[in-house]
Image 1 (cartoon, helix red, strand yellow):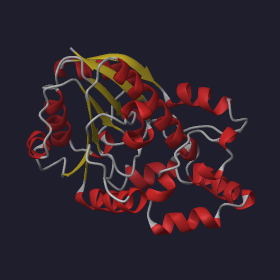
Image 2 (image 1 turned 90 degrees about the horizontal axis):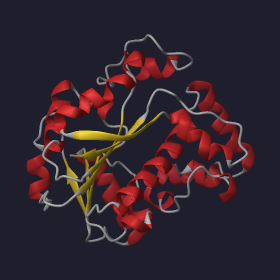
Image 3 (image 1 turned 180 degrees about the vertical axis):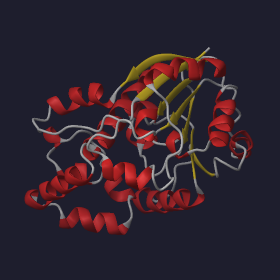
Length: 274
């Protein structure tokens, strides 16, 4: 995301001025080093050689999620819970979300890094944003959020970007059990990795990604696109939109004039709570 800001505004896949101030010092240094177009494009080329489509996937996915999040606000969402927020700046960069209370949930090390970055960039974490440290596989999400002031009594936007693949079956079960208790009208945005990739049946040119995630036991959970509706139904969620990365990336890339592609293994689901 930080490197994407090195492109001129008309060629960017997403605008995120804050990310350059929130990320770690080492990444900020790299953005300075790679600012010249030749070096910037060389780094993009290197990423494409090792993980084709990965550099376009992240900003395109975040732009899509922002659009759907703002749609959720137009449908009466009153709070945001970002599960696995990492260094994501959505609740800060989106004007539509700027007045809503938000809870950013992640592992303790990520929460500490994010807090440090926000304090450096903004002076302090805004009062409306609460950061919650958790181990999704071993701690109770409902209790942790409750202790952090989330009452769960208003329609809420829940976001899980690049989270589900890291969870064990127990982590998935407990997280979606929590989501099953969300107020009617709540919205959910989550990504998942295709099961065919995890099974090794559809790796394509992503052999290094497969080796570094699946074979190392880092990614656990996956779905097939045709099973998403049935997966969500017992938890009380209905699918509104279900888009592949190719579908939404084509829209965003076509306006930049850049000849790039995106990874195809991680769709995004947008759902509403019955």
